[in-house]
Length: 611
Image (cartoon, rainbow, N blue to C red):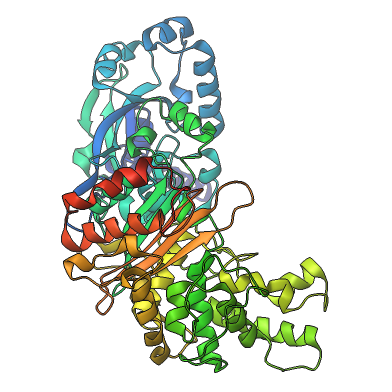
């Protein structure tokens, strides 16, 4: 009996201990630990992502170009939608029923518990009209955000635009932390500098009762995190020069790119036809985008970065430098203007040296310069000799930033084309081509293609006597200066001492008697311009006009390339345009006596005059 009595106390003790354990656990869960209460309370919590203030964009003179303005989006959380009266909802929101169905379907695919946009870019009056009625539609809420607003009507191609993130972008790892409806840089600088401009998101937890009324922050904001505003961008663009360039090109097709040779900073970036940046923001943006996309003039096409053309006679400068480096010509080498080799467009004095040849843009001279550079007797087989020489020529030309991306801070730069031996092997067959097949490269024609940005960079390289900085738009991110890659010098394969031999001839192009680029002259202001005209053959219509230059010749502050489609001779279209742009930048204004050229460039028939 005593044994049984002892066992009874043991059993009681065990039950008592278990009971105490359960009681203490319940006390902990119900009194001390609020994790389960918090989980239950999540039914009445709203997690609100605080999108930071997007960084602003300024020009080189600190004029504000791009700012932010508040807009509102109607969001939906599919799991919270109960007994939706679709007809009443659509009537209130002035939304087609099919749009509501598509929006709800897309929201459910994305997430049943996270908010997705139904209507975006609500104005303040629209918000006021629907806000008081949202209580009758559980699962729907208004979310404020900032949209881009523009203080400029120019520079649309470079600035790019901001839009709602697409489902395709959401799949990319770099956009994993974005949610549907959030803004993201789609193109241009807005896209390239997205992480910098975007900043860092914050989160707020708000208590909301069953009727959707905000009851304040959860636990005094203990779990909230602050957003961090994006950094501002200070561009190298001169807004006044940009506006003037866009005015000059008007409705023409073409481009103007100007660079500060000393830094690689882009001073203007004109792509024509143009459009205004505010066209790609706000309500109706999608329709306006489609109108631009369907426009036969292709205003969305970023010509300075994406249009590749033969550079014409401007390329003769590069060919001359390569030949000088190879030692096959000297600055005093002369070649006859032999019309049997290639046609020369006008009569001129004998090209007895490089200066005269550049001034007169003698085609036969540069035919023979490149022939000397390519055919150097490296093989007894004439086809192999041409193949070896062209390969070496191509490698040297590419050191000028041609045939490669320059690395500008934009995302859609084209490489262009500097043909290689392999290119002609594929085109003509191995050992089935020689110099006579490729001679058009000597005058910047044929298969070669470069962009407007690359052409401006070549002139910046010559201005620097052999090196360039990668062209860039942003001179300062916040207060830290440009990105590191834009501070590095890139040297060509040509000795820096050889560039000086081109300058007198380039000056004579503009200021010499009978020079082909005299309409770009600034001699009346004591400014010497070094330049080169080009007329690019076009099988589909009138020739294209191009001109590239830098000024002042002995202390360059601006290098510029102008390309105007279907406008004839470089000296009568592109040259005066470049002259006005350089005058505007270097003097801050254009003299009234010179403004007649504005009408000539914008409205004149540029294919019928020649100088």
